[in-house]
Length: 284
Image (cartoon, one colour):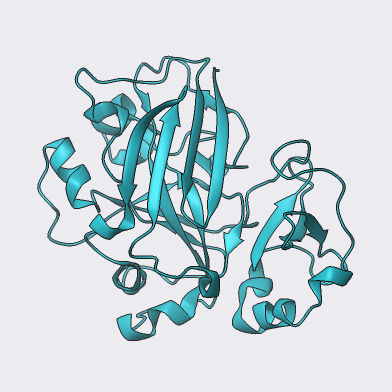
């Protein structure tokens, strides 16, 4: 299934994408793509539906029908740093001996095609296409061998980053990671049965038509099961939590000379089988 949320910001309704690329309304069956809906029993209930009998929503998704964040009521937005060997090389940093964890504030979350806002005073706003894990069944001290049973689905994340705030503003990375609109997610939550090999997904990002990132989840250092297990050693994972798993090379900071967003650009990005995002960039 490709689950989604459609409608105006703050008033999104739950939906599912059908085989013809149309949105079907799930409102009669669930209140949101969030909470208990993401548990195994909630997902089983959705799988049992005959999608062809659900009401068709007017409009074409990501054109004249806005899609919101593919998950609602996210409690934690957990990110993993320097988790691609080729990105660590690009950044001139060593591969960390264990995963680097930082957080994005949940107020950064926005729809996959919503405008991205450069913070006031920013000169180093950057992009990062990433594979997002959406937690279904929660847990703590999760065994790596059982980790995939805790996954409700996967999605595209743009881990937008203000590098000066991240690296030079007297604190942890969080200052440069959690600004409003710095966490577009979606367009849809893709259930694991539709993802053939999450270890070999092509991922890409363009700015104004120029390809900057062109990589694969194959170069991920710490893989999905390990990340779920590892994060659960430090916090309980709960339905709707997102783990954003790191980015391949091609970020603006890694260019020679560095390239940063100034306002007026258009970003397009996507991951094989998980859909794409398009964001206009504007200044606050």
